[in-house]
Amino acid sequence: MKYSNRKVIYKGEKYDSEKELQFFQQYIEHSGKKYDVHRRYQLFNKPPVGGRNMRSRFYTPDFVVFDECGNLAHVYDVKTSISKYAVTEGARWRFYVFAIKYGIPVEVVAPRAHDFKMKIFDLTTQVQSKHSRTGRNGKKTNEYYDVFSSIDYDVHDIIGE
Image 1 (cartoon, one colour):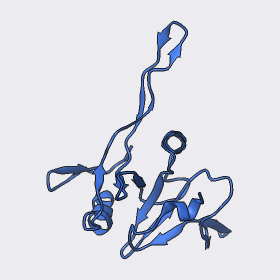
Image 2 (cartoon, rainbow, N blue to C red):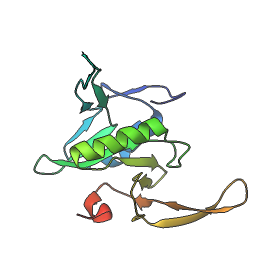
Image 3 (cartoon, one colour):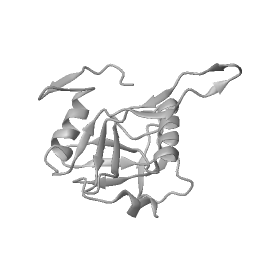
């Protein structure tokens, strides 16, 4: 869910924010790859509890990019930042369940002027590049993320497999 963002319409498609549209225009639109915008994926199908069924649960990533065989290559969720404060616990839970069910992690991206930061949450070991920064409180912290200038990379090179 986007907070305090205005929806934007571009070429008849609705985007949740300017950042999301910027990411689409810079990296996906002219990539030559097949993609979907806001495609809905089912996480749970009416699980029974007691004598009743619970509601189905879905996750709708911002963008899905397919490889030449039609398999999922990238699942992107665009945020203003990749910090733990910008990604809610509920969103992280949906990313986790999606990765288990569909076998590919959700890549949280934060677009910048000429590149984008990408982070995969909830990996047991940090396989992404380590970046140090000084926080507002003056303490040095390490963040793990990768920086890319195109979507021509294989996420499996990062997570293994």
